[in-house]
Length: 574
Picture 1 (tube, rainbow, N blue to C red):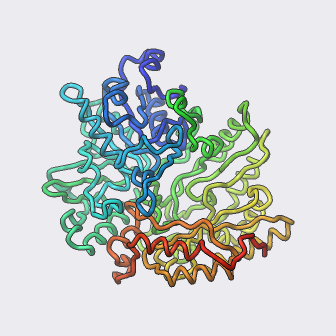
Picture 2 (cartoon, rainbow, N blue to C red):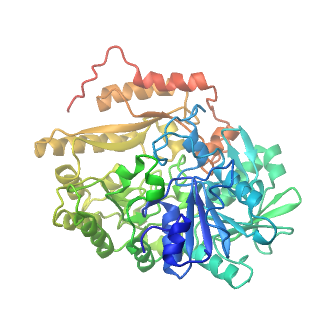
Picture 3 (tube, rainbow, N blue to C red):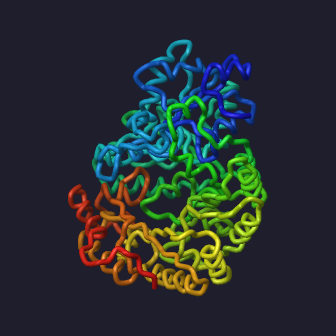
């Protein structure tokens, strides 16, 4: 297996008269395990299905969407690796000019609300006897599957299943449900009982939990909070119930989440052959910048139990770490290192949070996520028992692979998790400093003030100060001149200009930096922070909170941090 076919010439070469499934993606087609459409396509091909892919189709004509003919079973639609509105607009609603997932880098091929546009495109050109079921999935569909707040229209929107008029929606990580779905369509049986699937019904589902309706959510913000709380608490496959939500006279039915892949199953997915390149059909249109980042990077796991309130990973990938085996990961690194043009550098070995590999709560693995308790907030739960021993061992073995010069850890590091590991945390940090940092380590404290950190679901600034001191202490010990850079957020719900001034003072006095990595909070679907932004209510206390919604004042918050007339820009080592 090489590239998934995207042209008729490839179908002829493969001697495929008709495809079973055609996937549509808002990203260009990079054949990589970092590309969801490529993963799903390769996985389905491994199970015996004939799959084709059409990337970034022209929505104003039939030249792309009809290129591969009519699929025998169904169309699968995704916006790509990012929600299309996030990909197309900044936090202040300005149009983004660049797109790392488009050949040539110009942001001119991914439409706004891509899932809806692509479904409409298919329905326009495949009618009558050529009509096929349309399945939507990926992050845009997954995070917009119930009534949700949309920042770009400043309104509550219905489930994307209703707005797109697609037939079915798969949410979360899709390998298991899409294989079951493919078998159901192939056998002409109903897919309606598949876990991880949403569909529309004329009546509610017995024994499922009812969420406040679209009309109730629109008329009462506390009802919307209630709907989101129930939705959020029913995302773990070991504990979740099915949900339903009324939209006008019909119902969204959300089946319980699909069960997580086992280590053996996720190894199979990542052991599939990926070309780690852009398909030639699209490569001719220009350089795809995203390839530089992902080409020599390796995924170790999925999921994140950090549960930052502004992040949707917990809803999309889950709060449980699903990890590959050490053997599978090392095999992939060896394969990269043996390639002819390999320069000796691995860009990343990690996941949503790199140092969560090998660390998971045994209680959660057996009983599911706690309903009223988080693994990392307000402090690291004692039941988690963090140990970096396994990740440390993996990195040590990876460094010894032939042709490897340097391995970087580009995905996020939770410094609070390192400090919580009393046995191997210090050793892991030592190795990080000695082997896996070039000049700087990027961490994400996001803010300094505890009342804002509380709304973000982040630990106290005292933990950050402790880590900073430990980091520079080890730098002196190993005669390094590395430094920390900090990702910070302006205009998060609850934050006003006074809070940003306090953050500025903290950064100057305690961190000894003039912050550069500052972003304005972007409300994205299916996060608690977005819920706060829309309702102006703390969903955990029910109390009103301040939310900055004026664009100019959001800029002012950011500028408080990044503008400094009296602070030397040269970094200081402590």
